[in-house]
Length: 476
Image (cartoon, rainbow, N blue to C red):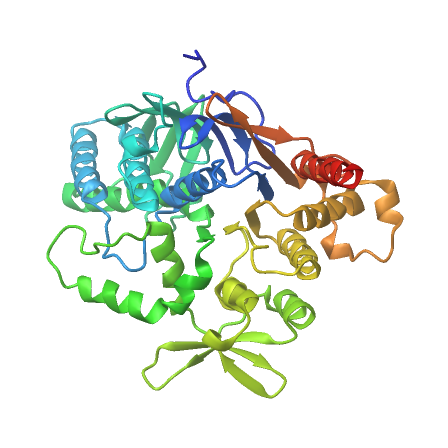
């Protein structure tokens, strides 16, 4: 059996650059090993069943753990950690201060990080709709992950149980200062670091109960201070077209379960990723995002119409396709419209800068010409401030993304004036990974993205096989 560093360990001293997340993987699902550095655009390329979706779902799980993005169909799942631990810690700190201490050590931040790992374990199980042990690669005894993100950093391993070893263990000192006013408090100004120690400056209070109450508020603000700067991740699964058509019956099933008394009222074979996707149908069609003009331009070019959401008499949304003066229900629209409907509506009515979007196999129902147009839209969205993870096995889609990199990075590309400026991608903002067979699984390998774009070795090999086959047929 291979002996490897834990979770293909990521060097914690290496500068992350524009990375939102760095991830090392060993024996997770079909993936035998690999290291991923998430960029504004991250492309996962490989055959069916190679683990692209496992990696994409893992990315989604980690980002949403940090943001505490909950399934919209599930009741508030936040446990008593924050309430219980903060009350206990605030009382202890206030008591120490009343006893004469002006600075009190606290482990609340480290407890919070450990809690985040527990939340991640729950989200992983829900996102894969499976026990953690089922995520171990077939034939192996454990999976290992190494995570370096903005809040969650550490190693994760799973044999019979899943366990974590956080690497970010920053001590916290609560410092009572006469120079801090209780009237004008900005949590960002109250927090500072000194020699890898987090310091929270708070004012004096003569009353212990009042002081304890205020300490709870400041500790809570501290815990969410970094988290508040993070945006959620939205997953558009490969089965999105079918989920959209079945939306009404599925949501009726989900909502009927909310009155049950069990801890998890929803009993479904659908993954948390799929139910989160269904929750996007609750969007308001009246809101328009800054991305709407980009989407509308794509719709006009690729679909010759637009996807619309209308409120019906029951205040629920009906999705339709508008072309010229005709409005067709989504069920009677082209498969490409069904497949992209919620993705396009989300971009037009919900999306915010900084969010991460995972889009599985966008090319599935699209003609090659429209795949090229969609690649252009992806480039525009990245340049407009969205972060996108896309899985694909389309040479047309990948080639157009490659053209966007060439146009944005090379001097020749920059001089090509016919290429739209907002479709040009900086090579430093793009990461691409291929999945190659390895010891009964697939290793995730980085693809070098440079001035010449994104290489397509997988597709070139397939084309060569077809060409050689044709030569033999003609010779016979």
